[in-house]
Image (cartoon, rainbow over all chains, first blue to last red; front, side):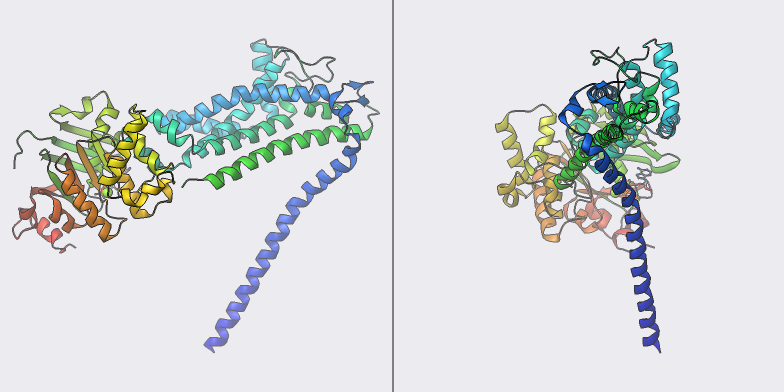
Length: 291
Length: 254
Ligand SMILES: Nc1ncnc2c1ncn2[C@@H]1O[C@H](COP(=O)(O)OP(=O)(O)O)[C@@H](O)[C@H]1O
Ligand SMILES: [Mg+2]
């Protein structure tokens, strides 16, 4: 009887396992399907609009024709300037918090603030940006204000992801360095950073793509519906892809559908490209991993 | 027993981690070029004692050290240059730590951090230390390989080579044979007999017989208390000063 009982349980267990596998696979497919559907639709409807002229010319006739070049350039400005602010500050803050600061009440408060800020909706950052940068500091609606707002939005996530990459470096490496008389900074510079830089970059790049896609933080702080020239300094207003897409799809009538979809395709393409770069970086360090 | 002109002296040393006391009332003097064996069950505070000496304990959040620790009569807690202090001490941790860099760079790390850039000097240091750690023959042809790719026993000898790379006056070995085979252990023990001519050695060991073989004097730590310290023959003999020492070294421990 023992034999029968065991084989019955074994078979049941096997069946449960198979079922679990199918369910998991199903869920995965369910997750991927919408993404594929969206991409497919974007390519199907937007691809006909894509051409060198579309990419590199200005919109004309009330944005119902022409291209999106000013928006592409504007997005690059916004992303570039915000990155130049948030990446160094974020990485340095994370290095300080992870490598120097002890576990005291105020570092705990800082940590709590970071976690909470990371979860604040972007529209709230937008309102803060208007109040702080546009009005209080009198930067006006400009690339500077918009980029600062984007930087404020991405900063907490960059700090959190950088901290995570730093703490993934085993403590024993640091101790080994201290034991031979290396200073804290030498240890960070020669062992901790080289072994976490890829993870840090991945986190930063993911925030770049997030900054490129957001509309709310820039809409009242520096992005404009239409600007008849390319920005020449951070004091100018600018167009941006995400903002342009919002305008095309809600504010202007009689826009040929392919222009709207083409714009969306370029924006998504840009984000996918950036994420692709971060995936490549990550897989390269996995291969180079030294411990 | 009072040591004349001790190389290292601990007086009224106390170590706490938060509320927990790890070492208390430690008075210990170590003579120059002596091998001091330190034995005691896990959690006795052996590692903490060594980490007091090179002041890495101060990097552990919550750790508090009180009391007086002197090297050559100088209070280590008053030394401004902590890196300088640590370069006088070689530290080998229980588990081997190959830094994520080549075998060569592992050993050249300390001299480089101290400002040595001359390739010839570095080459010399690397070869000398790897020979002293009985590892040279095995890695001579693969100095460029990652330190982390060596076997456990090789990494432990690499750790020893690194601990010697800044020519320390004091060498602390913390249960160094935990991760290596008996043959390698014997080879390193031979090395220690050679090194003692130039260094003062702390030999923390979980193998009481290792202390018996190598140590001039042996200290027995138990739950943060220095139960006794004396000539090794005495500690391992029939009549150590404390009954608990006898029980521990003869394996009668409940
Ligand atoms: N980083 C730490 N934080 C808290 N307690 C610690 C820490 N390191 C050691 N201890 C405690 O201090 C006591 C002594 O530890 P340790 O010096 O590692 O002993 P040993 O090396 O003899 O095993 C133990 O009770 C241990 O739990
Ligand atoms: Mg220990």
